[in-house]
Length: 269
Ligand code: AMP
Ligand code: ZN
Image 1 (tube, protein in one colour):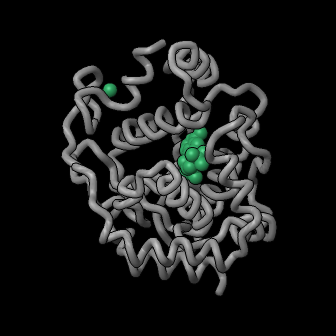
Image 2: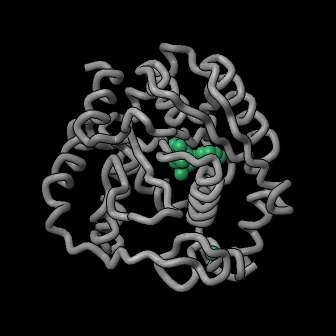
C-alpha cells in the first residue's frame, strides 16, 4: 500500500483532522516532517509550517533553507522561530549550561525545549492541531524504551493523536505517519525529490535512543510493525498515570507538576 493511502486511512480511522481545523506542521527540515507536510497538502488539507531555527550553525542554516523551499513550493505560510534571537543563546549553549548542573543526554534536553516552544508558539497562531513527523520506528522505539526503563505507563496515552490532555493552553498533537515505516518515508522523500536535510542533528550524540535505534536496525519490518500492533492491543490495560494538568508556577504554560519540564531544566543553568 502506498504511504499516501495509509496516511489517509490513519487520518480517517483516528479522526485526526476536522474539516475546519487550522493545522500547523512542525517542520524540522528532516525527511519525516517534510513528507508529512507534503502528503497533507496533497490530500487537500490547509496547512501552515512552523520551524525552530536552533542556531546550530551550518546545520540549522541548511534546515531553514529546505523548510523555506518546501513551503515556497507548496505555497503555504511559514513561521520561523529564531531560537538564538528569542532566547539570547543557541540551543547548544543552553543545553551545555544545563548539563554543567545535571547529567542529562543532549536529546533529552533539546526534546523538552522544542516541544515547549512548539506548543507555545503554535498556540499564538491560533492553531487547532500540531502535526509532527513521528513514524512507526519512533513509536516502536519509544514503547520499547519505556519498557526498558521499567515505566510502560509512560506509553499508556501514546497514539496517532493526544486525546488525553484537554486544556485550552495545550494544542492537540497528531502523528499521521504513526503506522508508516521510516524506510518507506525515506523512499517517498527521495522519489518525490523533497527538499530535505538527510544528515542527523550534529548534537544527537550518545543518547539512549541512539543505542535503541542500533538495536532496531537488526529487526525486520514485520517485527517493528508487530511491536506497535501488539502495543495497540495492550495499551488500554496499562494503568494510566495521573493526567491532571495545571500551569507552571514560573511560566504559566501547561505542566503536570508545579513547575513545567522546561522551567525545571532552564532554572538549572
Ligand atoms: P525529533 O524529536 O527531532 O525526532 O523530532 C520529532 C518531530 O518534532 C519532527 O518530526 C518535527 O515534526 C518536530 N521538530 C523537530 N525539530 C523541529 C524544529 N527544529 N522545528 C520544528 N519542528 C521540529
Ligand atoms: Zn514553565
